Length: 554
Ligand code: NOJ
Ligand code: MG
Image 1 (tube, rainbow, N blue to C red):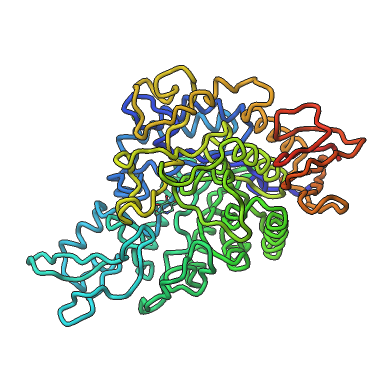
Image 2 (spheres, rainbow, N blue to C red):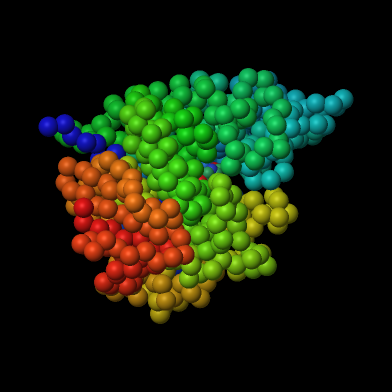
């Protein structure tokens, strides 16, 4: 019998370490906090956790600015705490995926400090993308690239002698200088980092900005009018350059060399690559490259039946062409939570995802949550692997009323407040409804203020409550696992109204038919339908209302 590797249908739960559980009361989540709460995930029924960065960092971009790739930031704990977390997770049957941030370091990284202290043209500078400026005295940036966080992607340095000097590239914040991946030293260093964490027993990596490490030769100007979050990135000189694939072939060999003893023992690599179209993204998951890549096109697809059908269909075809599984994701730490995102009127075409402030139009919370649960019921039936973001199993909405002076995402300041940034999805989660900080930690404070609605949505208010969002997730995850839907085949069903997504997923272990009503008109269920699970709290349902989904025995 051939073994199907675990990652082909794994459900992977993202923990944002600052915001999941705080053990020491400083208002910031930490590794011991996570370890103590892991049983929640075993009960929920996920296969793995992915931890966003917890490495030594000045935290200018919440840890995506790494100053030491081989240590834990004191705010999160110690390497011993990390080892204890991994051991406990493995004991509970949960695998552990960690983030790697190879596109840029923090400006506090010893490499960047020594680059600043060294001269133009030095080996220290050659690890980064330092260039002379344009204009008579080099006063203009070397090209027109914008930073993803607003403003330009270049900062000019003051040379050790005190005169204005070269510029360095940073696709994100000024404090996140991009590395030069044509430099073999950079490649060796990051391979060493992979080995360091593999030796500490991690089960895989999520690769930050996986489409960004290689830039087009000569760093040519870009067509900056392009919004690369929703349009094809393949022709922009800073994203999705062919050279990046060679890096991943090397990394795959390393991951494979660390496969554990026995069966189903892979360590995995998953790309965070905002690459369109899906055919270009599928190149990242060719057999000798990465195992998975996030399907952000799915995340950006509106809650409209035609759009959903189209995205799901071509997403499956595109990865099938290279023999990889698809991944599905609705929320993460960079986007508006889907319980709020879907609370807006839906328009055809991919949806841009920006932060929400108190003065912006507010999402309809009731509609948003109903759709979010239905969307999750669709997602968890789909063949492939699924990623969940902490708190979505509680139906947490985006925090849309954060005061500006609490905002910490650098995009807020870099855009002069034009973009509210991503803090709204990063607010600490709620565990116990009655406690200060809703059980997030022993202190009353949390690093971002929690909305009052979080109290009623706390995990303890939902555990064991039939029809709660937590109950819906737990039920769907159990059925998904029992029937091995992630390893199944999807068949669209005819004979349903256009606004209804109707499909069956069949694996060797069983089948489920999913009906999701994305229209306004209630739809009668087939008379003989046996209901296994519903996205809404109405049992028994013979009528499928607007924005409701049901799993039927098939
Ligand atoms: C993607 C990460 O998900 C995001 O949070 C971060 O700001 C950027 N990469 C830069 O590292
Ligand atoms: Mg703490």
